[in-house]
Image 1 (cartoon, protein in one colour):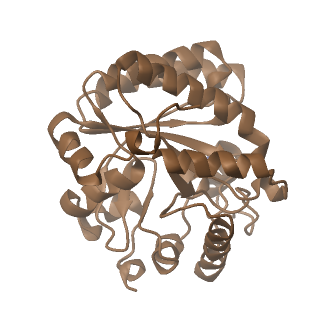
Image 2 (tube, helix red, strand yellow):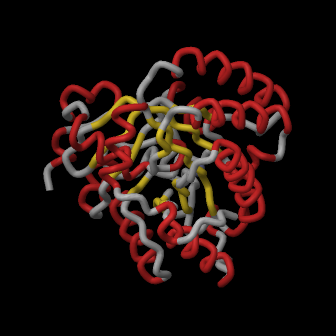
Image 3 (cartoon, protein in one colour):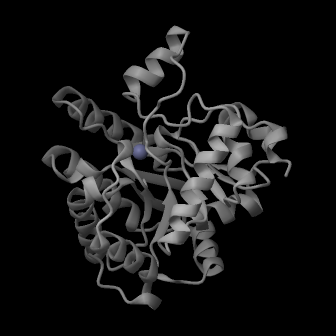
Length: 292
Ligand SMILES: [Zn+2]
């Protein structure tokens, strides 16, 4: 999708971060990258690239990769080559769970039930895992990535849902960054930056309408914040109103913001973010999780 050569997007991390401090930054993140969504992911990336070309900027994207979506063992060689090529061009690959399926014990409380079964449609793989189970899955994911020569320094749980031991397990597994819906977190220290997200839901017509209205309203609030995230999903380019909305948000951001990979934004958090205690209310961070 992106015509950029290896050097074009591999800007020195510190230079990109310095620019971001001066002008504000935007991270473009594509979720649920896997063979089943490969074609849809390419449509999204083509639309992102068209926005970047129109703005005259190079735009590195962070791709959240799921090794076996819902247990799917398919792994075409061409797909893996595509991922390696994107990484070589300067895009970032991040582990996004192992199966993306919430098969933890059933939620007992109404709030948890709504979140895990309705809002995220049973996709919060790490929502109810014990710390040891979370670590086991992350290590399996790291092993998978290494076996296929896919560089992955970050971990983002599906639906951003973390159980009580998820952050500690991510540290123990050696990941360098993660995020929630509203924060980017540098690991293992746990320093974090406020970085709210534009997110769309395309599951039904009413969700698409609400998404567009919500994100347009959100744009008023996020427009003044230093760090924005545009969090896209594979079918976000397949619905005209949704696509037009995020394309216009992205074009607006690219007029003055520096595009950053999540890993680069995490470096900003490492140097300038809130400490884990200050961010505890929003990240669910537990000091124990930071200790290695
Ligand atoms: Zn996901």
